[in-house]
Length: 290
Image 1 (cartoon, rainbow, N blue to C red):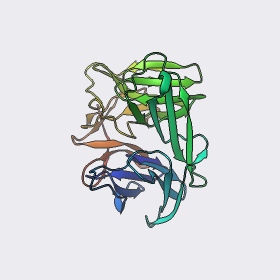
Image 2 (image 1 turned 60 degrees about the vertical axis):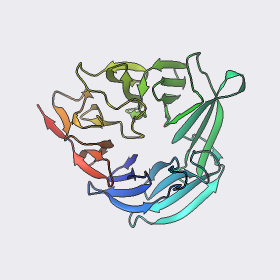
Image 3 (image 1 turned 90 degrees about the horizontal axis):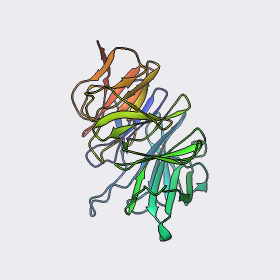
């Protein structure tokens, strides 16, 4: 999982998924904290990263593995990388947009829970309500991911099932296996797979990548963030194993990463990088060929 704001990149990963690292100005990510995991249950809690101009926030549950209230927000200093404050509680009601969970409620309705971080105050945010299932959502028994608010609509990427839009131009559902969405020029951009075809949804319109594009990620293994990035006026998508990266509206040159395992793409002022995954993260510049 990554978060990017200006020259700062935060990464959460490592073998247990709890190693927090920071990078500035394209420099190597340096580990700053091990956030902890449940060794007895062999599970790492769900977490989300959020960057503000002067702080990094980590959203996590107070107890248990799932991001459900009560919530905790841990604030980290961007210079030293040390934890400086914590906020706990159910969360203030607001536009919580860092994590969602959908589950089938009594009577067949789909219940939605969203949580997030208020970047100004560092306090947790929470929202709960119902969303239309349009007669197509399986949600057995629940699913979770990263939502996006764009164009007056909430976008919910549901792994292997499809992309759900609520509000805006109207409630709609598109079948496929979407990755987390990206806000680009005010539009919702969602990379993903439809069958064997790789492409992306732009405000719900499917645009396939050229024939021969490899799968962006295995089923159920979409990255938690950084699945796409702005690139030369267009957009480029991550291929988890590296190699040529598919792009749309970005000119004839082909972006490429060395073969490896990548957690996401990061568009920094210094250029476009792949975030290498593993015991410790690394930044790998994206090269251009052709």
